[in-house]
Image (cartoon, rainbow, N blue to C red; front, side, top):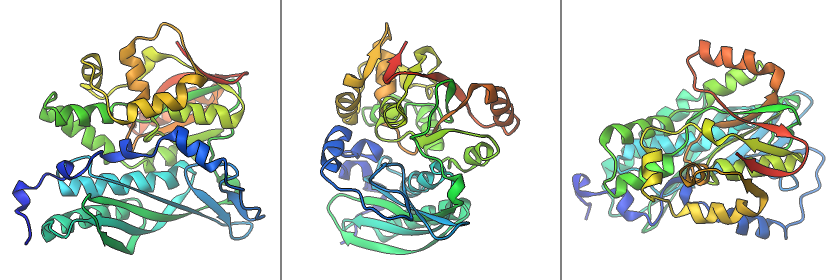
Length: 345
């Protein structure tokens, strides 16, 4: 028998929602260390240099980007859940410098969930995929007691236009294209610690595709790009520093936060992903007098977060002007230096 939609809270059916449900980065790193990367001339990005998506060259002018991402509900509204999950998956293609063109749904739902609720999830995902310039062409659905939804996405990119997280250079400026704190906000919402306006603001950010930001970046010579998701700002900065063979110095007072996130951090609110991210990053990071509130913001797992961008500092003024002209969010949070690891001041 179908449940009454009005009485169903999707987040009550999930042990952990959004990108906070990601497998431990430290354990994943250990697991993947046992795999031998595929040796194939046309596999441009794979497990040899793990990134936001795999990239395979078709010919001298074309390469395909392939990614998938799914997670349990982070919100109760089914349309918001479908849109956020779709945005999160599509953003992997934008983080690689590409353009998505085809997507398939990955879905797991209890059979008792009302059909109209599932319809709202799929419809919102379809609308988001179309907004990204792609088509939702099918998928696969199984029964599961915990709802899960996401997409497998294929995109295209010129082989010379691929962005990776492994090319940051000393002298680069480091930017983020969305404020931080979605994990804190959603956890605070579950405990009744935030208001409706703060929740709606966080949901709007999670439903915002990185398409427009990526369009601006294509006109600038960026060195390294990734998106900020479940491993938090610190985790993704650590990956960029490690794979680029550099040190990244962050200025904590410049960390942008969604309204309400810092207040929640001061009150001790944390997500289940926070300790996993600390385990992944802490040994590779030096903190210099950083308040715990900002440390918590840096470790906070993001869902459908913004882009983390490293580009030559001399191009900063042009980048900031272009983002400003389009009324897109941008904040410089650090610099790239010789060395290794992450330093936060």
